Image (cartoon, rainbow, N blue to C red):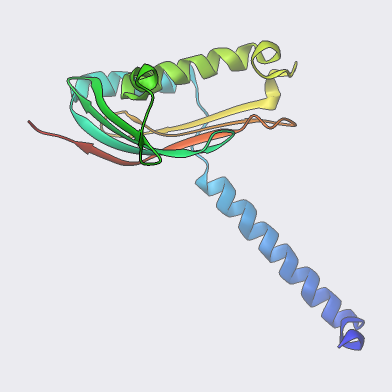
Amino acid sequence: MSSLLRTPRTRWTIAGLAAVVVIVGLLVLFLRRPPVLTLERLQAAEQRWRASRISDYDMRITVSGVQRGVHKIEVRDAKVTGMTTGGAEGARHVWPRWTVEGLFDFLREELANAEDPENAFGVSDPSRVVLYAGFDEQTGYPRRFLRHVMGRQESVEWQIEEFRQVTQ
């Protein structure tokens, strides 16, 4: 077998397969990434959310990166009425952060942090902080967020895996 690996044809075949694997991996990563988060996109999404007038909903959010967990949130009259993280009740003092409005506040904070990355992330170059966010086309709620700080272990990602409006 080792003599088989020494032939130029075999080496080129292995190199070609490795290149295909890398290219497919990069394409999957690129296509999976939501658009860049901008203040304009955030404001447009918030407008759609306000226009939707949704105040009763359930969400399941998966968080990965620096923090990990699955959060199930129940919102009635625009306030969290129940929240579990990994099956256990979530700390009540963080409940307001897990409404759609709270997620919009979080995104605004992330935009501000990206403007002052030295204080927020310990990097001086703002171009090392990349923020991506995807929003629901109809109602505007934030579907997905990704922050990556190049050269640091500051990545965080969350995705609303399930969003269900509740009619009362």
